[in-house]
Figure 1 (cartoon, rainbow, N blue to C red):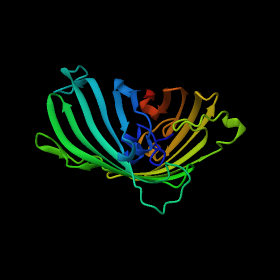
Figure 2: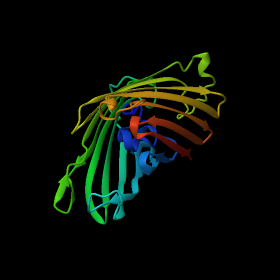
Figure 3: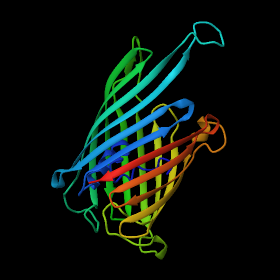
Figure 4: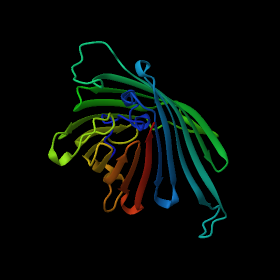
Length: 291
């Protein structure tokens, strides 16, 4: 969906996008595992688990790992490398989210209202045998007007700089704001409605503004259509576009994304294609379990 997820966040993936959305997980545990095949043999893995505690909110833990192997090292201007080294980045996250219960918020279901979330993160980087460690935090809010309209805001990577030997760099502080609208759940094209809290049919539209500390803001737009084949089975198709990515990455397709998924009972499989222009195509696969 082009990364337009700040106001959509309503499952275990919210631990990355907007921790406030974790409190929308209200009845069952959720686990997700995702693997991304990136350019230049870069491997990216993501795991997360969320546990709802009813009136006490939702807690979650997550792990992100980025690994690059066989990076060539040269001490002279030569086509032949002297050796190779690797880079490994890991982020360990603990999150908590809760819906505020004070009155005066409009809505027509148990999700409606203001949700707040926070994440504490330990970050460890290893490059050619050298290590750098630091801590960071994410803060998010999600306001569900009703079952159709929501607004979200999240600040990611609040924390100290990371230092290799004598060189330090600030974390990629980022602010995201977005809105999402779901329509068409009663359309004939949307198929069967199961009534389940994670099986929402119809058309979902999302818009985000993405503002990193060290770059120009960009806009992200995304759409998803979900069709219910039975009370237990739903299929989805998605597409999105990140306005501004083409300014940084040249080549055909930069900024575009597309994907699909299927849910059967407690199991969901998702797939996404995200091209990066001249750098090549990237593919992402994930499974999600509810239990």
